[in-house]
Length: 146
Image (cartoon, rainbow, N blue to C red; front, side):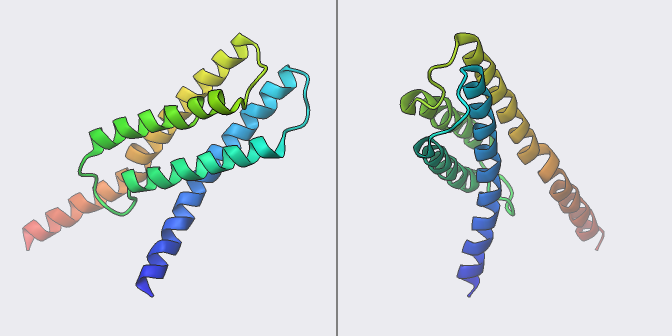
């Protein structure tokens, strides 16, 4: 039963990040399409985006487990950045998610992607982990007093 609960909890956590990535992609696709005069999205493109987001969020959850201290934080962060660039700008280029789009819109999309990636990193390693680090320090101080 604990294996099932562990898998279920992992799925819930992974799905949250997958949803954030997918929402961001769909939002940027809607803006890009509106600039190009299109106001409908292909279901196939949405499915491709969803699968890429799911795969990336799955790998991300393995690189940054939520309830464990990070042993290889720098290495995993560099790998995460590399994989993010392969998954999202790479996926967009290979699968044609944002074509035809003017060059300036592609630049805006890339800048938005980089800003969003930095915000996710900040969320993982500063905002979400700050409470854990503080609690661990206090526990260590309490254990040292005993």
